[in-house]
Length: 197
Ligand SMILES: [Zn+2]
Ligand SMILES: [Zn+2]
Image (tube, rainbow, N blue to C red; front, side, top):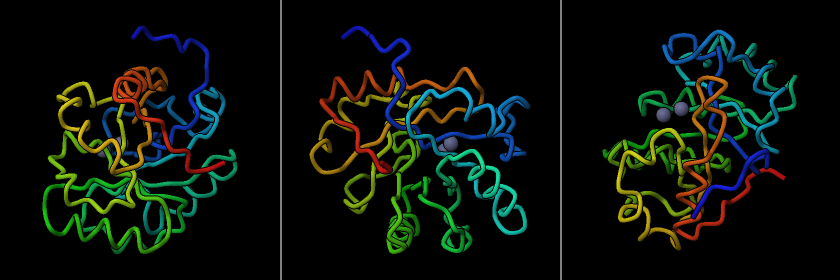
């Protein structure tokens, strides 16, 4: 199916990194919250910087900057050992690295207990066993990574079990698109779940 989404804003993009992820070498200095907000590539935009850079003392500045631009506030929990820190943060949603280990499947349950949406980040590159992921979680079709794996055989069996979201995982302005993720969703017959009206 050819791509035909030129200039049509995505409905939602909740997986975006900015200069708040200070130690992430893929981030360019221009990838500020303000720049992302100004582009308008999606109708609902959320920022999900890596928790190790935005928790604790760093959190208020991060929160205030994202909120000041009217964007949704998230964080990407890249390490299950930071789950307690994640649970303490006043965010709108979580993007979670669910590695294939018991601590992570339990961690997904713990994050769900907050009542906030929990997005399972790029499960195909983390070895996540979707059989063990709580069905209340949302599964991400990640534009940066999904093409690197056999998404048809690995996501296909779960189309009716989970709700799905599309994410750019943008670290630079020109990554702010979901062309591959949209193609995969179309091919699998997945309708994206919108988390925030
Ligand atoms: Zn990630
Ligand atoms: Zn990410």
